[in-house]
Length: 319
Image (cartoon, rainbow, N blue to C red):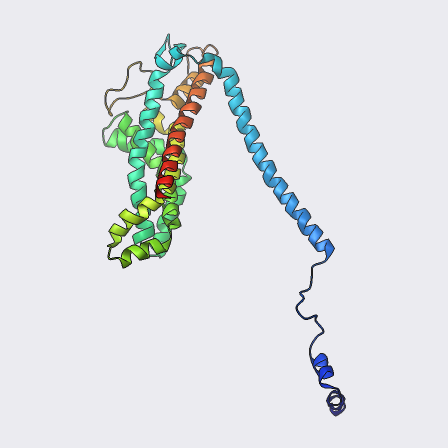
């Protein structure tokens, strides 16, 4: 032990430091090897290739479906097909009552779901205290989003049609669809509120505004474009639902236009289902099935475009 100390004591100062510290080049970090960089780059290319492949597969599937419907459904499209009611046991004529019914049910669902969903999102994000109860509520909302639409249809049948006595009507269907799309509205509205910077709230409160004035005048206008994104997604789902309206709003055949919210209606999704499964002559109505499907796609696309344009205008106005 003493020998080692004597050896170190007899060294120059620089040699002492070198003996105590490892030899690492000053200012330089150890560089990864060439094989490590090559492996990491290869792994990155593999995952990026998988992502691009997933995009291509989805786009190809969408193109095949739309192309299939265009090929078989476009010959059935005409002004008579769009502007007249079905005739001859729905083997001829058009789908005007179905278009009107789908638009009314979709807009009615939005009128029901948007106020409830936005109000719930405001409470959950702005007022509710973090804790076990808040986690339970959010878990319930997330689980509600995964419930099959036929369950909502049976719920609407039991509550709105039977217990409340609303009957098979536009109002019953709109309420049922509104509750069906409510979880999506709540989730997207809460995310939109979360995206608003906290400094907006602090600045408003610092100027003397109340909490509700801050939410209504500052937070909601800033979050509105994001909320419209959820409205677009919900509108698409509401317009294409069949099981939820077949018990509450849609009927097999009615050639007249609805006169009030208590009238029953025809709807495009249910009309497609009827023509494909329960029609008097399924093969004869095959062009009508494809034509109706194509009109439903165009209708949903048109309503989405209107909502997207409105959202873009709001963003430009705020920006």
